[in-house]
Length: 222
Image (cartoon, rainbow, N blue to C red; front, top):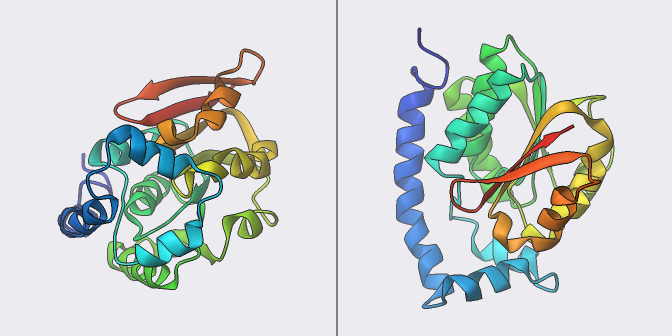
C-alpha cells in the first residue's frame, strides 16, 4: 500500500525540491565561509542576530529538513493520528509537504505554518499546490511571534520548530497550552538553541525529550 508521501505527485516533487535545495545550499556554504561547526552554531544561537536581515539574504535558499527528518515528521504525524499541526519556519515548504501528506492520509486536518520572507512564502504555496496538499495548509505571513500568538487550534498534535533558533523557547510558550499528552515536538538544528533543550529536558518540564539523528531534538508531551 502506497502513501501520499511515496506516490505521485508528492514523491517526484520532493525529489526535485531536494535537488534544488542541494544546489542552493552551496550559496549558504559561501555565506558561512570557512566557519567551524562550533562557530556556525554560535552565530545561529546568537539572540542579538538580525535574523530578518539574514533571512532576507537567504530568500533563495531552501534550508529544508533532511530527508530523514522529513520521513520522521510524516511518521510521527501519522502515528499519533494528527489532525492539527503547527510549523515555525515554512521556507520553501518541504517539511510542510511531509506533514500535510500525513494529514491527508489521516483523513484530513489543518497545518498552520508561518513565514515572513515573501519570496519563500510564494514558493511554498506553489509547491503545496503542485503536491495537491494546499487545501490542508494555512501559511501565515509575518513574524511568528505575532502570527502564532492567537487563533490557534484548541489542540495541536505536532509542533515543528525550524525557524530562527533563539526563538524556539518563545514559540513553544505560545503553542504549549494547546499541546496534548502524546503530542510531538520536533526541533531542527537543536544544538543552536541550548536554552530550549535545557527547558524541555528538565525533569519537571512535562516532556520526554531525546536527540534524533544529527542535530534534531525529538520530544513528546507527557
